[in-house]
Amino acid sequence: MWWASGSLVLVTFASALQLVVAYKPLSDDTLKHRLPLPETADFDIHTGNLLAPILIPRVPGTPGSQKVLKHFVDFFRTALPTWTVSFQNSTSKTPTHGDTDVPFVNLIASRDPPWAQPGNVGRLTLVAHYDSKYTPEGFIGATDSAAPCAMIMHAIRSIDAALTKKWENMQTQDDIDLEFEEDKGIQVLLLDGEEAFKDWTATDSIYGARSLAEEWEHTMHPATSIYRSPLDSIELFVLLDLLGSPENLQIPSWQHSSHWSYVRMAEAEQRLRQLGMFKSNPKHTWLPEKNKKDTDRFSSYVMQDDHIPFIARGVQVLHLIPSRFPSVWHTINDDAEHLDIPTVEDWALLTAVFAAEYLELDDFFESLPTEHIKGRRALTSKTEL
Ligand SMILES: *[C@@H]1O[C@H](CO)[C@@H](O)[C@H](O)[C@H]1NC(C)=O
Ligand SMILES: [Zn+2]
Image (cartoon, rainbow, N blue to C red):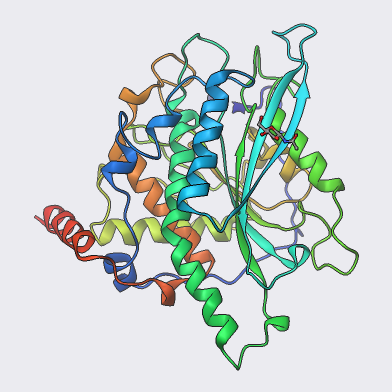
């Protein structure tokens, strides 16, 4: 991502449609005893099932990129077999590759209510880019955005069973007429080609996101659908970027139209901290602008990132990127060793909570196996000391 240079383009849609969807906070009991927590087995930088395989160079069109893509596909096939996985591919010339077309592969994974017509499902959409920068050679991009990809993987895996249960429950209840229920699903976009090959410009950056937004705008659902196109089906585009640094990096509320969702996530952050469920530095607050007023300044278009082609087409975006970048940003030091794993795990947990609350899953989490609860108690008592 990049700060827009020159004059700031501040667009304020005073009359923008404020789409506020249903949202139900998880109870303390669910948070403490039922929601699966991130584990070392997933986030260790050398052996972690989710994170470690992403911590390699993954420049578009290279074997590293294919390896990471395979890691994602294997994850869905084994851990989330009910999800639908597809790709959206494109090619482009770049300033560094002359006449060669560089391939870009976006991974799209989604899960809809089993009875729903695809054109009638509004989807919470969790997004991160998985490509890494072309230079410097060997660049890993651990915060940018290997860690955010792993956070999203954890989040969807930890809510998947509850989602199944909620939908089974809806299908068996006599008093629910599914025809009149709001069909809400979830999807994940792991995007390619976010990074510029040379210098960030409108044409040398966000290759995958530009291609996907354009294609989805013109892919029409059947005429009787509630949502016109897959683009239109995105209820909220939640973009994670540059997360997992040990530094105290705060995230402003960037968009007026999605401020309601920022507030919800900030409230979830606060509750997780109060319940002693975070492992990272307790002095940090990631989302400090909960009380920002409607009349305050929202710097919407300042931050260039994968959301730009979507927000330009009217998609509502919650952009989770700090205003001050990690000090290792775009250097060879943005590597595994410079991640703060407690911070990565806490972000994974917060993302899971946000998704569970957005999809109103509080009643559908099962009690965890005993060893999870033991682990949790150890964690809680440690932080309570
Ligand atoms: C897109 O690229 C992926 C990865 O290379 C490949 O597996 C897939 O078949 C391609 N999809 C299409 C529709 O071309
Ligand atoms: Zn970057």
